[in-house]
Length: 268
Image 1 (cartoon, rainbow, N blue to C red):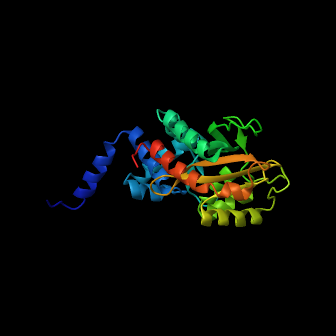
Image 2: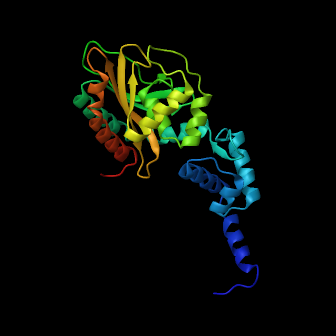
Image 3: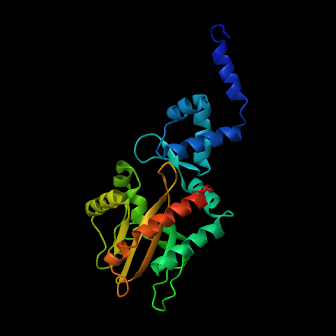
């Protein structure tokens, strides 16, 4: 089929004009999620095929409603708290809660310590689910509580998954109070630690959050390698040393794969 000059462009334009506004918004949201970085209106328009003025208008609407925000560096937009909360609710508030919890039960049975499932929020890592150890001597951090980014294994597993420029910006924006004897309070030292986490695939909390508490965590990632959540276990140092915790990392890794399959509703 051949087109007269300008006819093909008009057909493409008409096709996009028939897409309802709500679906255009979803296209933008989906693209931001897939790219995992700040994007400008020009980039979004190019990749979605939507008119640039339309993209500007829709992005402004999303920003006013709290779904996206301006990136700290550059002129792009990034998902904001409301959109991140929505994605968490969709992933973690559905039928898979029971199956997810059973995976945690299995991991806890293997490591013999308290197992945590945590996701990042603005105020730190939030415990979405957990299975407590049967030991009478244990450190309790209830579901719904938050732990700081700079001194917990779950948070370090998350931060290490960020691209290096975003990771550096994130760490340097944090307050780093001394909470325990081994808390890392220097941004450059924390960045060095996160580089080690990225290389070895797991994070350690060696009495950095609470004196006497050791923990290890791994990231749960989707099939494209993007971070979803953190899986961790912790226990008192009197019962589990850092070496002991690291020796059980393989159990966490297998648990993270099982959780990925449950969350994304795909068979192994």
